[in-house]
Image (cartoon, rainbow, N blue to C red; front, side):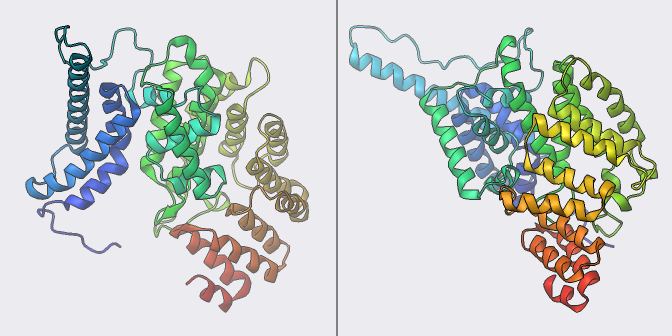
Length: 436
């Protein structure tokens, strides 16, 4: 039971309201402002200014009923003012350079507004497609979009890419500089341009969901705001491109993963693994919607990475219990997935599934190879998976060591509590000191 909060009638704290609006509204405010500014860099600057202004204004005037609308209006006005100042300056410079010519006006260019032929129905999705510009490298496209549009921190993006934080910060900075140097404007891509940007867009939505599904830090297992944002974008993509197999695959994957969100922690907020979840509480409507999308994602040629992951999620969703899951077919699907997406995380997931069919020793051998590979160094789920297999084999001291290694890499409070409990189980009092 939580402790009582402030009186219901007390006004909201301005600083907390600004922080909450930053988490929930950033993508909406930036996308709406970019459409007026016509320039992502200018839009970001105006949105940042709007949040600073909000802290001062809300402290004096109180938190508005609709913080997102207040921030959007403020940021868009700042963008329009900046465009007017730039137009005025250009006019004055032209007069200085060509004094014999009369001034021709200084109004800014008209703000871009939705037209009847708009292919992308949402400003956030429009900005995702814009940031995934082919002039940037694939990783730069995805990293920049996650940072600007989705509001992820550099730390969270670095963890998603399995690279050090300074490396990711440098990538984002270089991408922004390239956009500025190449004068890449905020522009809705033409219909013919969308397919070339689609894989990067799907990657952005998937990483956004993954970051929310198992929050890298904080008190809770799930960051609902990121999960809901990713689901919204996936649904809009499917509405925009219903015949694209990988779009179907991504939406199916998210639905079939998210259907168990309510069961991933107990009443006290403690993490529950898939084997321990109450399957009777899984969202059957989401399962049905996801299952309906999987066949279309798999048909028509070699399946893509999102379609194959959706097929794996479908096997988990339809199984009566953890032990009853068709683990052999899951291993086969992971092997097919590795052929189209040679990710070490996929290889780790295959190792865990292999342990369910061939025994923990077989899974440990695969994990040992991944440790030698080195690409998962610093990935908290590698030592966690290793520890679990060692625990199953009764190698308690080695398991405790691996659990401690995972604990050192974990910042999420619910995951830390789970790992500390595991340490206690395999090594007694050593776990109590390790979890502090």
